[in-house]
Image 1: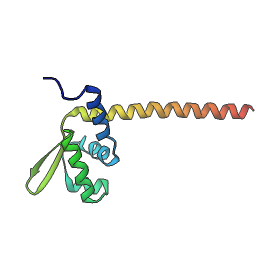
Image 2: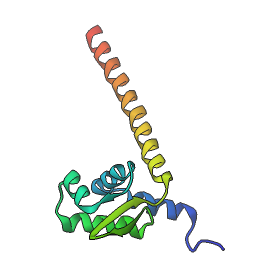
Image 3: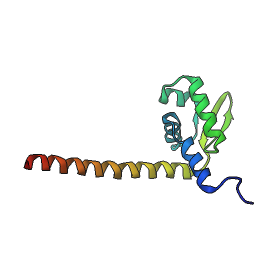
Image 4: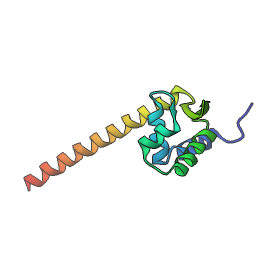
Length: 114
């Protein structure tokens, strides 16, 4: 079965979904296992309506799943690959920032030579 959109468009949509700080924070918190909404609210400190909207976006995108445990709604990463994606994002940022620190040091050295 062929997807209805090209792969590059599907990837772009995935990255658009990840393009919100609250969504990234939710995914980071869920790396340690399922969490109830009340815990997410405590950790993220946003309005419950805002968190609810962001969780709905993540659920529709298939990045998280939800289940009930008594009166609590638990959220879980849909696949461990989401945690891997976040890890790769941290690695990319670390290498980018390291490069910037190196450039800054070079600029400082060249300024002292003048």
